[in-house]
Length: 398
Image (cartoon, rainbow, N blue to C red; front, top):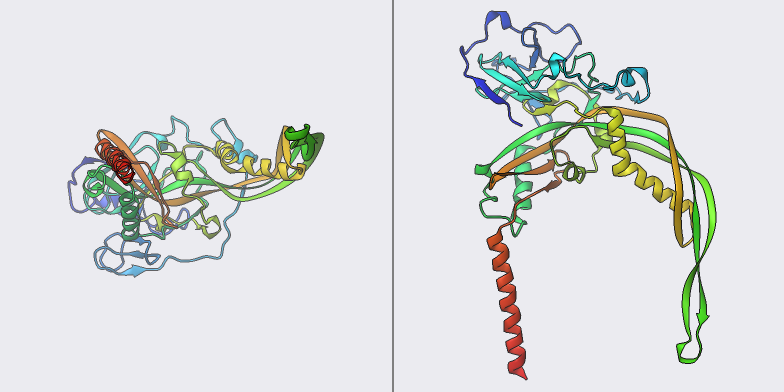
């Protein structure tokens, strides 16, 4: 969701009291603004704020076009034990409490470039100033005591131009979409957003009981009614199987079409890089609204349980399988907190919002769209007319 404009800039320069100060707290890149608890990435040549360019993978200045490399590191992204006291402490399991100032619905900050006021709403942690387009990031949410720190990020690899080309192809292929919907450039909002995900590594040990069915054939009947029938011989079975899971991703944000976003998979989790705010510069970002324990239940529903069931059926063998009971334990059970890139198109048509999602790495497009009643009726009429013409032609030939 784009930031709501809260008021015009009062001064083209930020007040002296809001000048950036060196960030000695964490060694993070960029400049930290203490009074606003925000971070920017100024250009050393002209002072404008840099943005991350997906096409080149560097920070680029929109004013003087100079670039700056993002320091790469060989450091590995660590894993957290889901059952550890640090994660499981309290019923919120790492989620911000309602009375935490960092979790309030609205948070106003003053742009350090133009002095304008920007409002961060909900879980938004990175955005642009609505007046000068300077990238702004909130530090208070990431540093909140009850918030899990971001472990890694998969940077955008698909830039705006490529994303628009992909979405043009997708929309053009929707035959029954209203013509007005296809004019999304004038109807919709197009944003690059880093969404929160939890990625899980675990080993599942599953005990099961059930029945194995082995098919066999018998000849039945007499005379002309003699025929072969296939029957199944059932036998009781039980056993234990082991499944290893790695990089199973689960969306940790609400308010979007989770089923559509799920279809953007697979994500190349192995390419994630240690987190730095430089990758977020110029893009939107949201912190998580679903904790890592709930995220694991989502991962089970979407991927893990289905794979376990498939393994159990293979272990039972035979031609048919019946699973009477199945119980899994997971050890170890570890996760990472990642930010993954998605281009988001929101179009309001006929007073209803429709959203289209583009995987910011692979370019995969998934989404919803309206249907044109006029086009559907025209297609039906044309089909009926074609059928009638064929019938008349057949009768004429006779």
